[in-house]
Length: 135
Ligand SMILES: Nc1ncnc2c1ncn2[C@@H]1O[C@H](COP(=O)(O)OP(=O)(O)O)[C@@H](O)[C@H]1O
Ligand SMILES: [Mg+2]
Image (cartoon, rainbow, N blue to C red; front, side, top):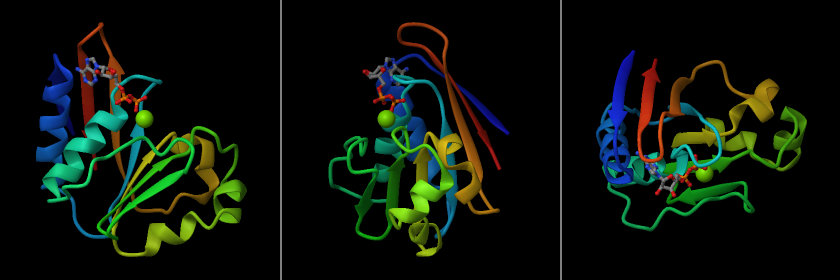
């Protein structure tokens, strides 16, 4: 388990960039944290660390953004079950060989694969966050 204290959005992006170096193809990362915690900011850093130059934007309305098959970034905020995720064809990407980062994974709990890592971002102040990464 790694605990990191971030005092700025840039610091969260930097931590995401370093965290990306610990990931391997096919890894599934469950990304927990309230709205505005910094999940998407963290994912921007992960994309950077994976050498992705495209801008990472929140997939809230699209559910999933595909960054060249290297990174799949999910936002399941608007889903309410694992069946929803399966019906939309989202679960196929868990086994496609890219790295998956999933915001609001608890909304699709029954559809999540067995092997996954966890990152939790806790808002501890206006600009401060505690980030916990677990295997
Ligand atoms: N230390 C920090 N780490 C990440 N975001 C921060 C931090 N401090 C302030 N923020 C702000 O919090 C918001 C996080 O937004 P976002 O990454 O979209 O959150 P989420 O995806 O968890 O809803 C941004 O407006 C960002 O500027
Ligand atoms: Mg987000």
